[in-house]
Amino acid sequence: NGGVITIPVVVHVIHSGQAYGVAQNISDEQVQSQITVMNNDFRKLTGTPGFNSNPVGADIMIQFALAKVDPNGNPTNGIDRVNMCQESWTTAQVDANVKPATIWDPTQYMNMWSVKFGGASANILGYAQFPSNSGVVGVPAGGAANTDGVVANYGTFGSSDYGTNFTLGAPYDKGRTMTHEVGHFLGLRHIWGDDDATDPNGLVCATDYCNDTPPAHKANGSCVTPIASCTSGLFEMVENYMDYTNDTCMNIFTLDQKARMTAVMNNSPRRTELK
Ligand code: ARG
Ligand code: ZN
Ligand code: CA
Image (tube, rainbow, N blue to C red):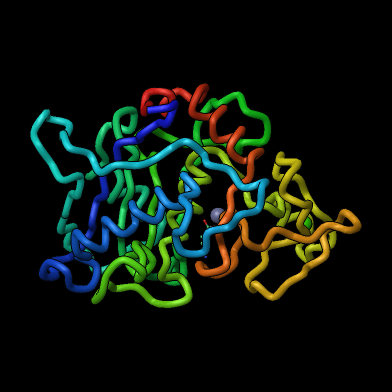
């Protein structure tokens, strides 16, 4: 299909005994709305919410489909509901317990988890594991096979544009948390280059290894623009999926970000096998 890669996805819905569709036992429709948003965003589909016609915007030529066959060869809808008998989780607990207990072969599926974050992680929207050994300059180190994938809080998993009675809350209710996390899963950095430790006040612009995302000082939480880049005459791309702005603000991956994700898909051991 014209060079488009379709990545099979399993969504693990982690709950603690809630009825279907209640709280963290999110509905099939809510799960599907998340896949719809990722396809809108990665394929830059015309006419979708927040569509951005900036010519530097890219169709990444990667799309996502809920798996139709499970690891045992049986039919599945790609949604794996698991009662883990614990109400909420820190990211460390997700990595130590939830992921190893539920992951499907990460060379055959992109694993996504919807969980309720709690404790020290109560305010986290989502997080990702970077690809390993991609050989692509500037990709942070990845991790173990049994923790590979992307995780989001159930309150940000999906989009209120595609259904009702979802567990979502504005301004993170349009599915852009997972678009952002899958960007990391495919090797992207934040547009400010992640120099928070050495530049706590956001005085300098570190590189994200993309020439077409203007250098950015620090994470932007607001879409109030323009924010001057470190490069005179350019403005920070607050609408990039790899900034920290609200879901309705975010609407672009660039051509250079596409090149990096494509290189990861072609070179990182587990990622190449997803094709
Ligand atoms: N804080 C998360 C991360 O760095 C996700 C940010 C998502 N932003 C959003 N507008 N949904 O991975
Ligand atoms: Zn991030
Ligand atoms: Ca900086």
